[in-house]
Image (cartoon, rainbow, N blue to C red; front, side, top):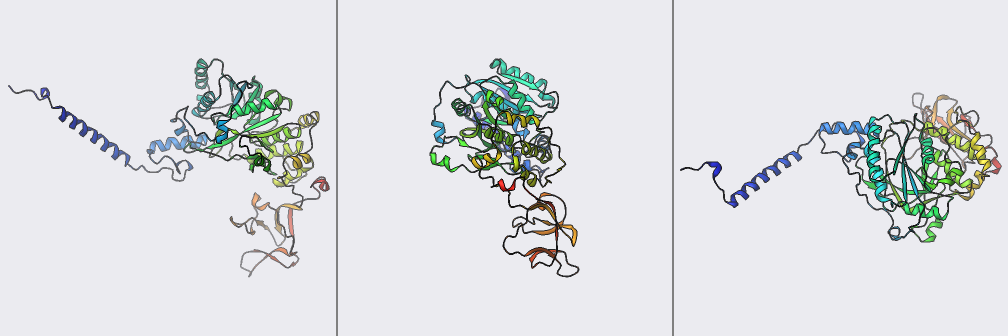
Length: 506
């Protein structure tokens, strides 16, 4: 009798061959799928320069929409583990350094406004996993009036989940209106109860061993305000880039910048030693009570910018000091753009004038110069500063002249400037001196537009020749030259009569 085909018993070798054939067919199918080239929908987007070549058109659209909304790659962030490993970027000597078990307790404040949920949860997870549990007293979330729905009930549920594993560790403060970065940090400080408070952005990941150096140094000296070393998390592929250890400084417009390590630090020949720093970048740790004694932060600051420079000046001038700790590393997510503030220079300028008015004495006019503003009646309301001036008087703070000579000698006063702003020639007042193309920046004639490249100073110390405009022929454009003076005159937008007490400035 003929057996049914289903009942035929195949040799084991045949079964293996069939399995291999099926496996080969599946691998061939996957290989073909890999070779599918998807059309690039956003060739000019910064998001897709290094990342996303294998995304479908639908995935590209989703990723780009999220990137526009947040300024970083939320599509990727949502697919990365919350406890992802990151490279340990500390110096080898930092990894070997031992700290006392008996250190001050720590409150970590995370500030956010419409941050992506996965970013906040990754920050929380990194803090829990990389901070000794006996030192971490609490994590305080401060929501500066977010409008994203998932940061309401969903976030509350996530906090409950964390607290189920770590009872009482997380709490949240929610503003009832948008109050800005500085006030959010103040709210976090007010809600903190530990010995030391670390005030961080929510788009960070702390690295291994980040807390112990901070707590140990503040235990030694409660008047030290600490900055960790920032590493950079790239906004597109979330790769971590190690940044060199540097001091924090600023220019006369009060924009933050990095300063080289001081010679005195190298002479110590100890990579773990604190770095004396003129200013601070924004992420900070301090003895909670001492920070309150010196006025926390200036709640009169608007939105963003200048608050870190104000804190740095106040700390140094009023009896404290700022240090960067090479052994404490925090990875900070770089935004490609700030969705909540398209032009934050407006807020920075306003805040800079506020800082200058309270803390910079006769040097304050140099901030006006840096922003190309008239010294008298600049037309910008920087708010009521009477309470901050009273605080300075109460704390018996030193002068800005002391600060610049003893703390930040690299900040060179602008004592040689006689005029600033746009320069218009009387032959054609619609034409101004412009910076010219970069590189080179050879001065050129250009239509007046009032932006910063036309606000730079122009000097001629030696030749005594005049800066004038000429035409090669009646139909040619104006050309800027140095030549023997022919009587042309320039109208300078702002002239300097006296930088306050000019003779007192070095």
